[in-house]
Length: 175
Figure 1 (cartoon, one colour):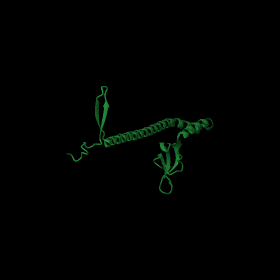
Figure 2 (figure 1 turned 45 degrees about the vertical axis):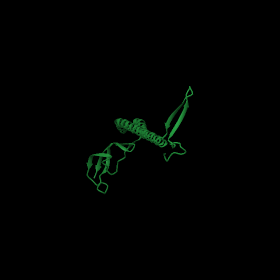
Figure 3 (figure 1 turned 90 degrees about the horizontal axis):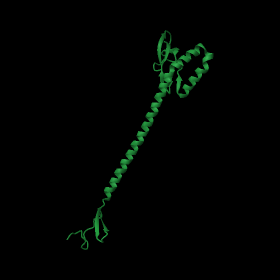
Figure 4 (figure 1 turned 30 degrees about the vertical axis):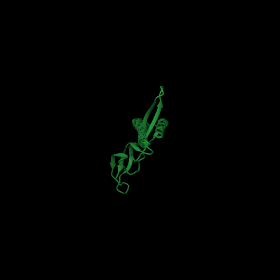
């Protein structure tokens, strides 16, 4: 006799459930359903982990696409501003020749571009920075006292777009 048997009955396995169903002719049919709770819980946890990972991956994807779209818009507006620089140069030259006639149009164009992020660099009297300007002429003389060249004349304006150099200025330096 088996040691696990109690009162002549077979031992009870809690992972096995017997489901008795009565058929239409009165016969009893027993279906044995094995329930492995730990396996089901592990499978559920596995599916939950997969769902959470997919959700996090999708959120990262959404943020990356949003960032890339913003960068593309930024580059496109920068290219548009760069394409308008020759127009701005022509307005600036016309302003020098006929200030009274051109000033309203020049100020309007420059004002609208400033709202979008364009800034003219003011380099006159500043120490020469090759990241901001190209020296096209040089004159002898004393620089800033530290051996650095100083910008004496701006021959073509330089511009920054939202903090980065869009076009370097053409300048004359001393020192």
